[in-house]
Amino acid sequence: MLTAITTERNQTLSFLVSKPKDILMQRRQFVATSLATAAAAVTLPRVTQAAELGTSLENVVFTAADPGHWKAVEIPHVPILEVKGDMLHVQTPHPMTKPHFIVSHTVVLGDGTFLSRKTFDWHDQSVSVHKLPAGYKGKLRVTSTCNLHDLWLKDMTI
Image (cartoon, rainbow, N blue to C red; front, side, top):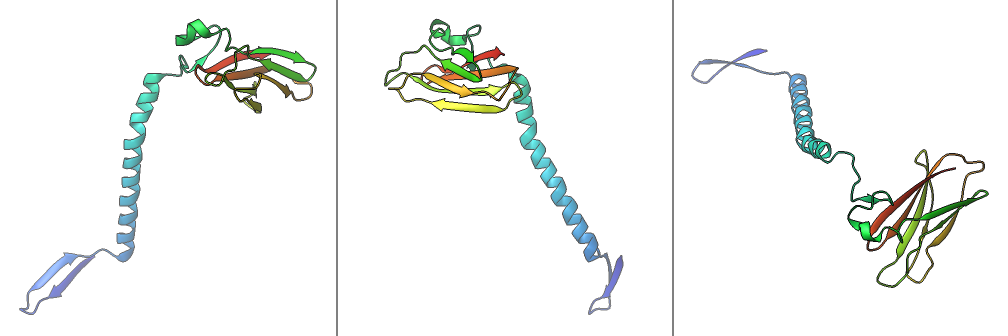
């Protein structure tokens, strides 16, 4: 909207005046654009990093077949699994000393559902028993965590 005013010296000044509603819309557009730009600036570098890292869990999660940089110590860290009825028995054949011990066993069902976790102190035996869902058939993922040698994974299908 073009508005004109007259000054004390009888000069007419014309200028464009926005309606209050237009100003509010411009402000909202500015905020939305600013937020979108900021989000992109934060997200894009992380997406690029994730693409560079890939989905490999090498030297993050260890298995008997892929012990990574712990190749010399895989045998006492990989959990031993046995199903008896509806119970899963887990044992990690690892010495339990105050400076070096198994911290926990965790069981996850094939669809990613957390089943249970047993934690240990250095003076415990690294043995746990977990109740399976009635009639469960499928994949199990069991982890054994060592306080010095990280996370060890064993899969099993029943």
